[in-house]
Length: 326
Image (cartoon, rainbow, N blue to C red; front, side, top):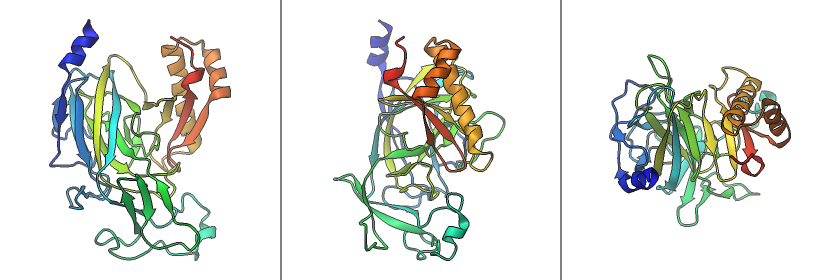
């Protein structure tokens, strides 16, 4: 009878931040204390600090909503954060105008066209970004300008959160520009509506932060941005005691995912791949009771790797249909 009682006691809370932070630091004042099982409805700013009305409300880049203190969370536990709803709440977004030099041979783009587009085209003082129109009714994004002669550059929106994480271990917190074992600026395009993100707890309360919503982003974020916009987010946290996670995990409708999460340019992608693979093997052995050798075979013949961020993180996906029943 415990589960029905918890559901009966669960609440829906509307929580809006007035101050936004740019680091996953445990020293930031708590935005709200929440109970596991409560649905929290809040809003995020875009990566430049602008809200749903186009008003400057936070500092560039990637201002974070939070931290949320989860009652009962202790170091060694994990937070399972279910993204119940991601709703775009603004009719425009922005992105970089060119692929980053970290994603393409420099000699192939040198002299091709400038990264500079037009000053103040979207945000005052910025000259390397372009505007995208967002059709909230049709759930589509379309490049406003410049206009291509050959392609409309009109796509279905796939809303996602770029930043989600707990307060990082240690006495200080990393900026919201990078990722690590605590989550952070993951920029993984499978962290969308319906996904559950599992994060390690290293400080009392977990101290959960959210931000950096994208209307659309390709694998690897090769331009350095998604289609950046503001978002309404509804989420529910489940507390998993003594989980002893070493990095972030994601569960979607059809897959379980281990993320080898590290800051971009800190190390090569093969290290991130090893982190993701090692965690997946541990997950299969501990939670699915697989023999280590069988876990290795499942990864080897059913695993799918994603480039999460160029020169940064990798993810390993396994289809739920191939997992042992427990």
